Image 1 (cartoon, rainbow, N blue to C red):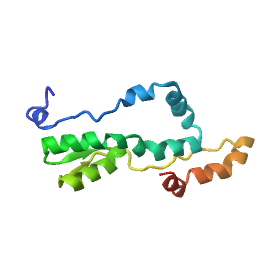
Image 2: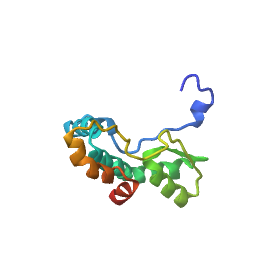
Image 3: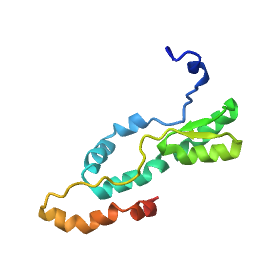
Length: 136
């Protein structure tokens, strides 16, 4: 808050009921993050579930918006749906803070190995926008 002037008094950060860092440190999550960067299908599942991961926070977000009645709600990429629900219900404008303009599987260069040839059709399907839509 220091160095922000009166802006530090006007911006309010509220708890949303989760502990993302604790969950990311769990063994299965660390494995998924490591392997997901190399396996398109796993990466697709992770991206498609990112919004669902935060949906339980909707009640907390609604509560704080109802109590504080802010001029607007600033939301990030994974909670767009929550911001839209709260905005609609409480008639509060929303402003997005999005640092990831696309929600696609990053294309990786193929190495020409046999495994690339075998998994090529599966990777083409799991890397498509339609596959991501179906997973949501």
